[in-house]
Amino acid sequence: MPESIPLELDAGEREAIALAFSEQKTRVVLDERRARKVAQELGLNVIGTLWILILAKQNRIIPQVKPLLDAMMTKSQYWVNESLDHNVLQAVSEDETETLNNL
Image (cartoon, rainbow, N blue to C red; front, side, top):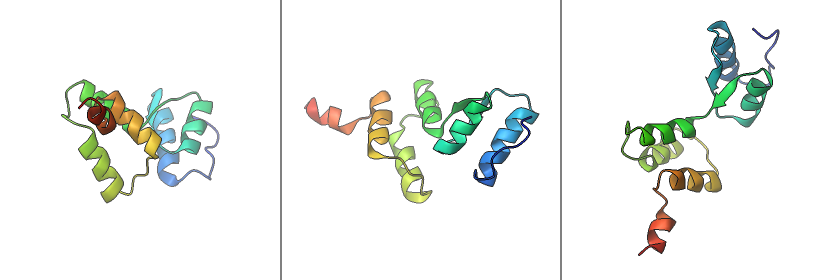
């Protein structure tokens, strides 16, 4: 367990990192850039929520990413920049601009 996890991270991020160490896990789910950097500096592998959505679609756990991503952004105030949103949808073949270009 690291001696200290920076207090500038929010409580949930600090708890997630601490839990990964206490459970002797090498991977942690974090989305905020600063928290991801701290976890990586502490030797943890970081995976984000968007990557989990991509994996869920690839493994046929969910049929589509876009409706979930849209709901996360509108209902849960989950922020994703436009470029990342586009890249995620493109990775799972749900990119609307690509579809429109193929018409």
